[in-house]
Length: 379
Image 1 (cartoon, rainbow, N blue to C red):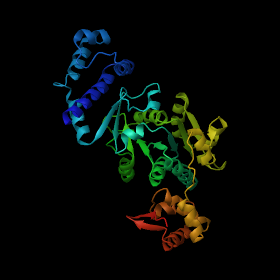
Image 2: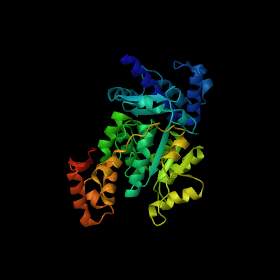
Image 3: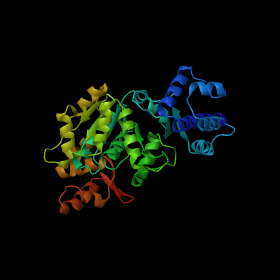
């Protein structure tokens, strides 16, 4: 079984090598023809391969060598071994597990590298939502992310994002907190956590979801890879939700991809006085669907809301301990993910209030200090 899996990985890595060797249109055609059963098999003879592709003599020689499992390119052999050792799954465009939405975009990756316990199930999830937004998000953005995504994730919707600071990270944490599904699409290899500060989140996502990439394992993120990754963010889901965005945010690149791919764009409106709401408010003016509550998402994603609404632990805590507005707001922020004292102090609470707010929530048993960060303990 191990040798069989190793050989399967070699075949798919050869497809990737083929894509680098010749243009992607021919590579895509080969895989589509393979899926339809009309392409030449792997053990091509020279007449077949010369008839199928227009290659130079040098390209022919390199391609024959790459497709010979006994004398495959050393990089391909090494990568195949590494993927097997690190439990990195390879899913080709010809594989039935390849995400249906992603197949529809103009330049889908020939092969996806997938790392995580729920990779296969997640990639075939019937309902998925891509979430993007500001890296330097506000408490309003954090609260919206948690309130909107937790019910969705609990109802089975897969939350897709890019593991970046800010809204991306908050989106993954909201899905994990609801014990739901989430996928992180990385700009480098699936074994390269970016940003490095999200190492713990990166590991948690693999336990409850998956990280995926079109880049070879070990690849460090580069500027050009981010734009390429953004087309996958929008392409993997039926809709893209923007939560906080400045006027010239990189988030809008993902929105452009979504529009070109014919996917619905949603945006959470914000204050007309907030720089991080300029982008989202403008998107709404230009035709994006405004999201003012969870009911808007149920409708767009065609998800039936739970027949019986489970009590929100946040609201339960607020009522039980009669928390005031600031206490409730800090608890809501921490429910989306742990923060240290310095990070809390940077929020828009009065500086002299921060220590008292933390003390009050600790006394209620609602938060605790764990490894230098304050985390929520629901009653």
